[in-house]
Length: 378
Image 1: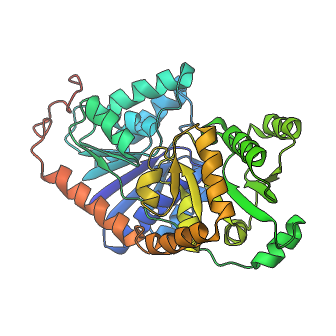
Image 2: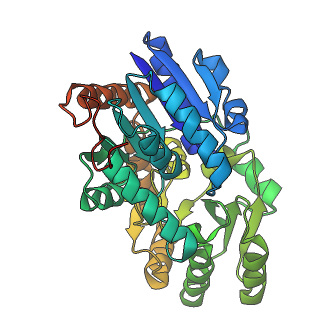
């Protein structure tokens, strides 16, 4: 089978998933070509998978000239494929446009929900509609994405299977990590791994820690591993509130931090299949998280989930975990069990092959050279 994998710019999760698929497909004997920006082809070492690579000149924002060239590249390369699998709304919409009038089936995996209001949100909404109308199957990393696609009239919309990252070895033990942070053995440690950006709602962490300390006398430090555009604003807010929250910046020892934590916290407004929480499950961490996007599906019963943006609920949950060792121990046991159930690269490959088989066997408009579903004639 000839498979074209298409992706745009990626900071991590999408690129790792496409790399795993490319490697698995090649290993299973399929002919694979990966189309992606030059930086992503290098960053994720696609050449090492054995797949052919083609530079796709797209960025994270629309650009008439670059997008026209990308369309031409997609038409030329993807027309010879037995199935095209695009990852992301931007390249999904471009792939749908490139395949208008052709019978090549298109699968699109959407890795992110709408960024919300404003210009970015309006552009994303347009891309979602194009993907829904121009794809044979849409895979969403969370149930809310799938529901949006069904509402927009997608021919097929299902949950995506994304492999969890394998467990990362711990290099430094709990005591070494705490010593490096300058805290004693009795100080309770909250760890958040997140980009410092609005989607992660780290203001909720600051407010919840402040409220918890108003109600309980707790020796606690909350640390955030990650960088992002909100760093200066968040630091000013932390300083003004006088709360024990520390921004650590980018860290290469995330596994050590998670292993040393009394609780791992996620305050996100939306998540797909959050990598940091999957790492926390593998590590057997006590988890408190907002019930955002696909978070609940990832952690199942191995976390305390609170409503998105709810300061009081988050403060109560943090206090419950920090003040009661039995609660922490129960969550840790549940995390270990749940971690063993997370999907593997083999699971993701099997799911992708099943998806490809379903769209290739379906009787489709366009199989006689006509237009694709939901698209005008070429």
